[in-house]
Amino acid sequence: MGLFDIFKKAEQPKEAQHDKTILAMVLFKNGEKPAINSVLNHLKNSWSLKVGEVEGKDETSVFKIEDEMIALAYLPAPIPGDEVTNAARYAYNWQTAMEDLKGYDGHCIVSILSGKKTTVERFKLLSKVLSSILTSSNAVGVYKGTQSLLISKDQYLEMVETLRANKIPVNLWIYIGARKSDAGNSFYTYGLSEFGKQEMEVVNSKLSFDDVYVFLATICAYVIGGDITFKSGETLGYTNDQKIKITSSKGVFVGGNSLKLEI
Image 1: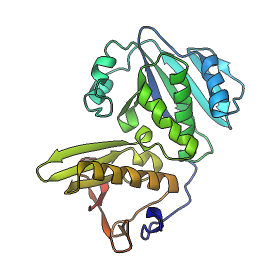
Image 2 (image 1 turned 60 degrees about the vertical axis):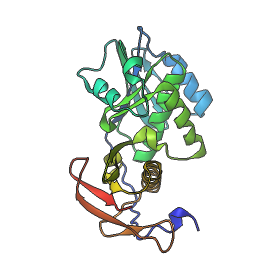
Image 3 (image 1 turned 60 degrees about the horizontal axis):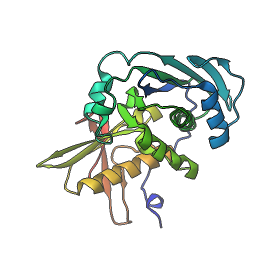
């Protein structure tokens, strides 16, 4: 019996079709920018996607893939404000981000406009478009402000390959924050709300840092991939005897309420 065969009492509602725009930004240096024809060729050849009629040029373009509308808009300037710098300070997945992004001078806004596919399918499409831009250009990395995610080019291209195995690339979609203290190891998510789910936290666990991280990342993939909604008071476990309590309460590291997983 596998791990996900023994999760207890998880409600599995049919996901509603979402009509909100989802987006990310690809960062560039030295005046580089995406070339729309190269991007589209990669989408066709690498991801076997059928691209509809394209309007616009390298700086601004709009096209369709599987009835979803995608817009690319290149701006020859850094993202306004200091959000990228702040994200770089906490990007434990990209420890040289501050240095690598020094002097970046352009960004391309990639938007998946309102459509009929599920949120998961639209995030998959976004990831494929981003990977095609990264592969066909000298981009530095990707910034996703809604999730406070900053990901290097190499890391993004490595992780996006999980889509070919029909797996959820959690680290491309969800920021998993970490805190260490004498009381234990704590982790929290930032971005599950984009999928209509409550953010999750593990607070002061006595398990090892790596074990808690892997556990929470696995649960995130399960929740997103299966459109699972946990309720306060339910339990889950790796074995029939294990019962990890789930409680909804005010977030410790995130705003609003979060689901606490007591491991």
